[in-house]
Image (tube, rainbow, N blue to C red; front, side, top):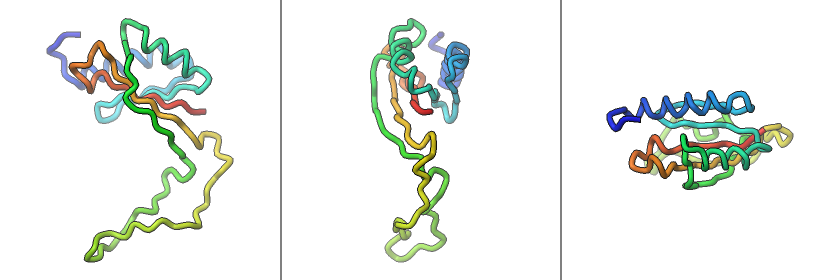
Length: 133
């Protein structure tokens, strides 16, 4: 890639390459706000992570962050408020929520990777991988 390409062009190219290579293996690639995300089947995580590390096209050699996600109440909002007091918005957590403990994709692990080949352009070199299903 030329140094004159924009971050948007680079991230679009990365997303397209990942989709071309991995969509047939059950992976889902998305691009939003110049950030590429790839959801991979958990049973393929180790194999795909090694490929992303070793492949000349990617070189994702640095794990920047790993976090766990509980999607049991995803999409529900207990943080919506319509009023503010003099001390700010109320952010109390409701204790009696309906949590779907049998949800198939309840938990996920998100890995943020950085490519050492593109470290000078960090936004292009970052990839979020979510292992789920």
